[in-house]
Image 1 (tube, one colour):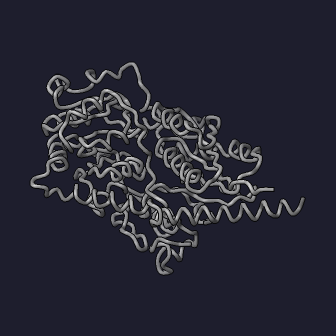
Image 2 (image 1 turned 30 degrees about the vertical axis):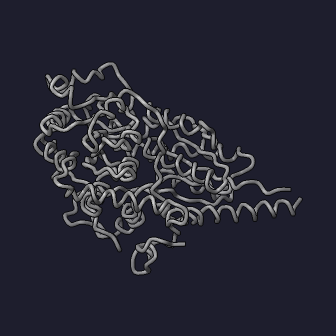
Image 3 (image 1 turned 180 degrees about the vertical axis):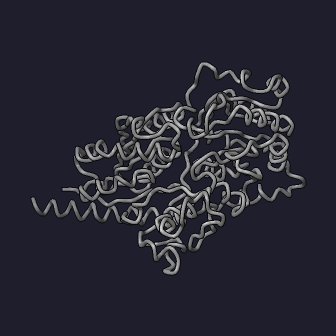
Length: 460
């Protein structure tokens, strides 16, 4: 009897930032390593963007996608809780459905791969004798913080946000207290050769966790080939002349901040595409699950400055609610990206060699913005966090000009992001570091699968 393909189950928490990486990893396991894959999605409200991403992933059908029943957490989470808290509680409450779904699978998968919010489901993998992994589609700095937080909890007195000095992480840049995100404490219990220096060195994070790390990114969505009117407009614009403005599938701004952004774009006198949605009346966190939904008050003229649409009709294009981001960023006319710097958006921008204006709204986006602007030098950012203070029109105008204008080819930010683009391509190509890392992970799962099946055959 022939041994079947190795089978992996992947678990995604709600939101595009979690769903897209899980789907892209699934595609690679199927197309590059001949796996059978089942993706479990813990759903809540399904936005237009999420629906389109799922539809594009099942046509052609490479793997099964199972949407688990929605979880009602209204009685468990305060209405003012952060996005991180909401998702963490959803994933905790979804465990019975996750356990039931895995128990009913026949044949049983060999491995369970969860995203960062799914780490509390790792014991379910143990119950069924599965290999278990945590997929963190973010940067190594964020991973280092996540692994180190339990030790910071013992060292830091009081709340993190009340600390004055940056928090030290072995082998990494210190983290500002207000940027700390606490989750994924179960990561050291996952299975998985150590490849990142900070995790390998016994004097650094190696003394905190021996969990293997496989750096497999950057994984981004491929072009879909779709066309719409906005591409007809883009085709007519000069090369690298357009700033693309989008805050992800769940990001929105206050009315005051939208007004300043509109004026900043207009004052810059540069071309733009702006994915607009109605301003939020509450904190940015509160709109995460609803921002991608059209509503009755989504006419931009009702919340943008008087005359803005008329004055910018030859310079800008407004797209309501959602735009095909990968296709836009890959267009040669796009020369900059004003983004909330979620990791998907970050990778898509870098993969297309597009420099950024980083505008973090919540969660690990603050760390991402620091990494992009201060460490990698592929972005500019406001002097103060937009989540703390309204960014004025003059500063926005200055940042747009800094990104788009290239005096005599001396735009260092643009040059650095293009270098990073080529590095990413090399890492993912056959024989590259990321390609090889995923191959090692796949081989570990394949070896266990072959052993298990051989034992079962001998038993019969």
